[in-house]
Amino acid sequence: MINGISTMADSLHVAIIMDGNGRWANERNLPRSAGHHAGIRSLRETVEVAVQRQIHTLTLYAFSSDNWQRPHSEVQALMRILAAQLPAQAAHCVRQNIRLSVIGRRDRLPAPVLQALIRAEARTIHGSALHLRLALDYSARDSLTRAAEHVGSNGNGDFMHALMRAYNADCPVPDVDLLIRTGGEQRLSDFLLWECAYAELYFTAEYWPDFNGMKLDEALAAFQKRQRRYGAVPVG
Image 1: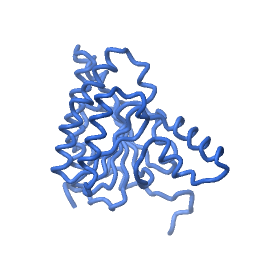
Image 2: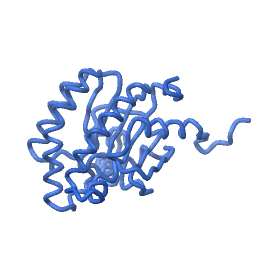
Image 3: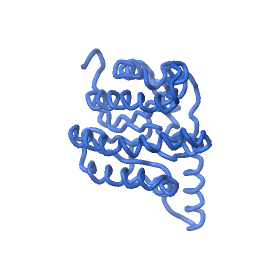
Image 4: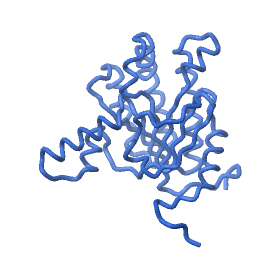
């Protein structure tokens, strides 16, 4: 028991839609890029608490395929932040025994971002305290479509393997147990649709830069109170 929260089972998969960076900045009359910078602090603290709570996998929605439609200046700023932060995050992951990997398309990422993520994955491949996954240029519907096309064109095959291949996952992970979305919106936004089939959903009004370890603990405490039946009749 840590801060009133039971340590988690070693297969727990938490996914977070990190929403509200731009609105956080707008409300403070700051450029939207300032919200993305502020979100880095929340990311670090959330990851540290996830390790303490013995979470197995933490998947963070960093950039969706639909986000390419945002203003060019904002996309460029976000890509610069990613390229600059990935080496530092990789070093932090090495110190914390965390494995960092990236899921999503890679063919549209700027070269500096792609090179930084490849190096980060290589540096952290032996991490065992937590599997931290960043979803970049990720679309669940696109991945599902390409996986189905791959299986169909071959006449057979393992769909889950094809799905992993479609979004460049290098190893299988448990299905999502808890999906958290910050920023007040209550939708999945094309994130891990297959893997969230039986996920417990937790929505919070806090913008991502205001999310912290205490807020993660609140979400975990709410999750522990849920009764997960997977379509079956509850026992007793």
